[in-house]
Image (tube, rainbow, N blue to C red; front, side, top):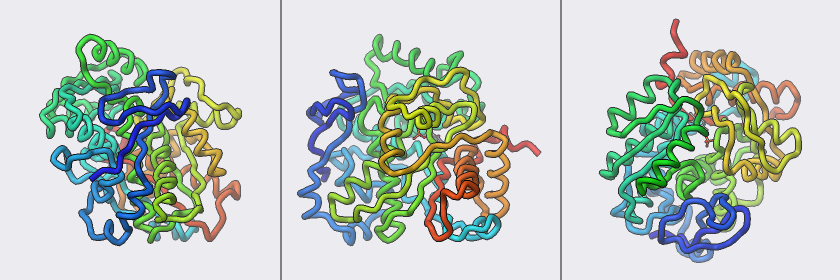
Length: 389
Ligand SMILES: *Cc1c(COP(=O)(O)O)cnc(C)c1O
């Protein structure tokens, strides 16, 4: 069922056999990317065939890594609505604004895509115990799929993570460790457990398949827009999996003959309190230096260092996009604006995309007729602490 052929290092290009467990490239410690036999897929698979399938991300199963369907762990992830935000658009004077509402995924965020696919594949490869450092949403998503798979789950979150993220993991049966520090510190503590206890590490881009789950954002966007792509995509960027995943999906879809060469301008938005990618982009760097004292209410953006920084920066530059930082205050105001005009209760990360949009509009960098997609990456419900009064 899958056309997965091999893995390839994103930096050094070395190739690896796909049917065993891998984390980072053993040569250069950078991410491994899943590669597919797209030539054969092009002959056997069509957009029409896909159109008749189930309303989950598994509609693209030939382009996902699981070989035997009995290992698929499905809670209904993916195929979220792409909403034409006409009311919001009218309020701010822009017609062609769309919101991809990822808050409707299992566990309330788009992390379900990456973890659903990664744990399905890990299950197929015989993994029994999984471990993850997380700023919040990834931990809940991993806990859910681990529960479904009957795997033992160990999650590591910053000690000041909102209480609901912790409760969620407990209810879903995971072993929770709170760490004094940020997600990078959680990563260090989790790594210790991986080394000592033979746990499989599911950190962002430190195994190849979370990215494959996230890339379905790109496939869905194209399919929901009638196999065309928008002009601008604004994405709240932490580890960058969704952005890198979409960029990969566009490339695959062009090779499949499903879309043409047009690409959206990819725009990263981060918080002013943690903006390593924005700084590296502005300074013309290939890699991003770690951000000191990261702080923001947008937990998903509290990522001071990303292993795949160079892939995010490459996609921004190749697409003629940009990177922009916004304040937490602006995010909270934008969330209320989206809520009262459009009826979507967004997370602060999702709200950040509207703030970025408005800054870019003011700078004349998005023109009137363009089609713009904002990513609401999660539900506002999980951030109950932010909305008092
Ligand atoms: C994780 C997360 C992000 C950032 O996603 P990346 O793919 O890691 O850049 C954005 N928003 C929310 C709600 C998240 O949970």
